[in-house]
Amino acid sequence: MFCGFKAIAQNQASEENNVIPYDLKWSERTALSILNKYPQAWQLDGNDKPKWDYKMGFVLSCFEKLYQKTNNKKYLNYIKDYVDGMIDSTGNIKKYDIKEYNIDYLNPGKLLFNLYEITKDSRYLQIIGKLRTQLETQPRTASGGFWHKEIYPNQMWIDGLYMAEPFYTQFTVKYEKGKSLDDIAKQFELVQNHIVDKKTGLVYHAWDESKEIAWADKQTGTSPTVWGRGIGWYMVALVETLDYFPKSHPKYKVLAGYLKQIAKNVNQYKSESGLWYQVADKPEKFGNYVEPSASGMIIYAFAKGANKGYLPASYKSVAKKSFDSFIKEFVKVDKKGEINVLNVSSNVGLGGKPFRDGTNEYYLTAKTKENGAIGLGSFLLSAIELNK
Image (cartoon, rainbow, N blue to C red; front, side):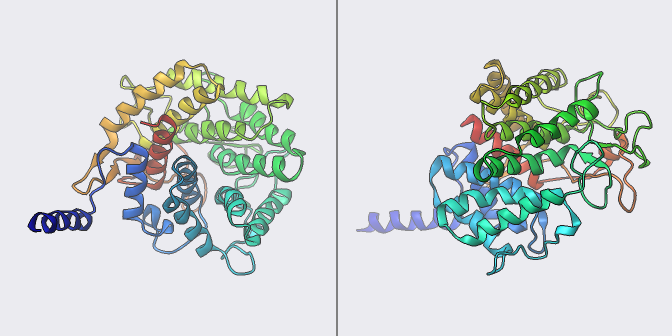
C-alpha cells in the first residue's frame, strides 16, 4: 500500500516539475518547449498582444508538419487557437488592411488550407480567398515582381518569396487548376536575374528595380548585404513551393535547378563545423558570427531537398553533420528539459524610419536574443525533417 502511495507521489512530483523527457525526438522536445514558454502562439518572439504575423505563421507551419507526423492534437490545437483568436465570426482577419499590401500577411494564410480541410469552417476558406485577392492587386515592379509592401515601392525582398509563393502555389493548384504557376515561377526568375550575386551565387537581401532608394546599388539595384537568414528564406521558399508545383509543368525543372544552384553555392560558405554566418559571404569579417536561424533553414532545405529528390542524396549527410553542430553551438537545455536556442539575430529590414541602410555593419550590430521565433522555428523545422 505504502509503495503504491510512493509511486503516485513520484508521478505527481514529476508532473508538477513538468520536465520534458530527454528521450523524445528533438522536434517534439522543441515543440513542447514552445508550448510551455508561449501558451498562446501570439506570444512568440516576446509579443505583448495578438497580431497576424509572419513569425507566428512560420513557427505554426512547423507545428502543422509535426501534427501531420505525430497526429498529436495538441499541435493542431495550438495552430487553431492562434487562428481563431485572430479572426472574427464573419471571416475577417482582425486589423488586416489589404491596402498595406504587406506580403508578410500571406504567410499565416498557409495554415488555413489544412484547418479548412479538417473543420470545414467556412471562415477559413473566406480568408484564404481574401489573401489571394491581395495578390491580385499587389503592386508590382515594372518587370512583374511583387513589391514587398506598399511603403517599399519597386522593391522585391528575398524573404517575400517565402511569404507569398508557397501560399500562392498551394492556392492556384487547389482552386485555380494551376493558372498562376507561370507567375509564381516568374518571381523566382526575377530573383535569379537580379538578386543573385554573380560572383558568389548567393542572394542579396533585396532589389529596387527603380534603383532610387539610398541603399540600392546604382548599377544593379541590389542592397549591399548577403544576409544568412535571407538565403534561408529563399531556400525554404523553393523547397516548399516545389512541394505543390506539379512535376509535369515545364517550370518545375527550372525551380529545382535554382535550388541545386543555391545549395551548391551556399555549401561553399559554411563554417568548419557546418554552420552559416549572419553576413553569409564574408566569414572572416570582423564581428561576423554563425547564426542559428540561417543555419537551421539551410539545414532543413538540404535535408528536405535530399529527401524529396530535388537535391543529390549527399546533402542529407551534410544536413546531419550541420544539425549536430547546431545543437552544440546554439542549443541549451534547462532544468525543465526545455530547449532554448541562443544568439538568434533580431529582425532586420531596409529603408523605413529611422532609415536602415543595409550595410554589413547594420546586420552585424543587430541585437541577438535567446529564443527568437525564427531561430526556434528553424531548429524545429530541421529537426522534423531529419527525424533525429
